[in-house]
Image 1 (cartoon, helix red, strand yellow):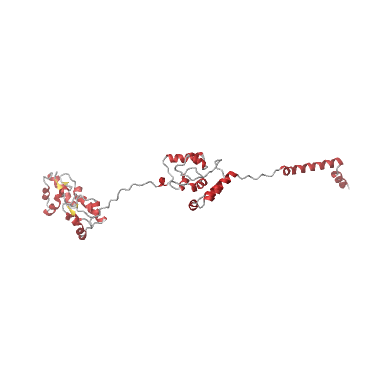
Image 2: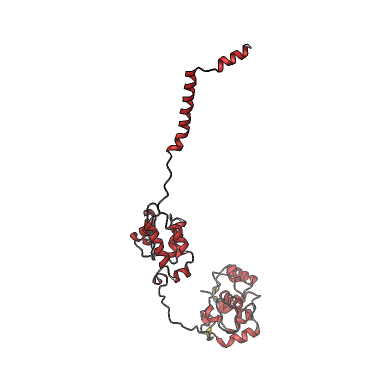
Length: 308
């Protein structure tokens, strides 16, 4: 009973307390509902009529040629025309990136920094040869490049400059008779019987000899066959047999003497040793005083020796 009396006394209100509680609940409800009562509906954005007219003109004025070359031109226009480029309007027109001025770039919606980059690029000799080259400009955004490409028309004179061609001169492939001591690679190449490998071996052998003293000597070239020599011989002559390079036997070392194809290493050593023992040679014939140099060998190597 005591507990019931305590609860009744605790939760019972006087008339004034009950009225105050009701007023408090009403005030709380007003504050909760207030944001919903004062919120206004958002206005729908109005369509830019001027921009809409531009889109209509572009779509109506596009030619069949543009449609064939740029099937996505309409897509690019509708995608980008409604957006602004940092408050720069995009007013498209056909242009040549090699000649359009700063005002034109502004009209195309580019930023000042990008325009200065393009102008600087052109001032240093840079050229646009195809629409895709616009993508190479530093700072130009990919979507900006894609937006511009359908309107790029590069003048043919900028792409294809006239080339000056020298009159055609037929190459003379007819073999000519040549001097075997002065003939060049080009002259020998067109002679029948010479392949690249044989040709260069022949020239190398001529260098080691110091020159030919007879046409027959070319048969000594490594890899030279009788059939190749027979094909070559009608086109070879010898005008300068005295122009061969000679070795001074009074100053040459055994290494220099032994480098000649006709002088074996033991012969070279003997020539130098005899000179050291008996003094300089008075004539090339003096080398025959060396017991194992016979007449046949002397006649073969004598044209390539000197005592001066």
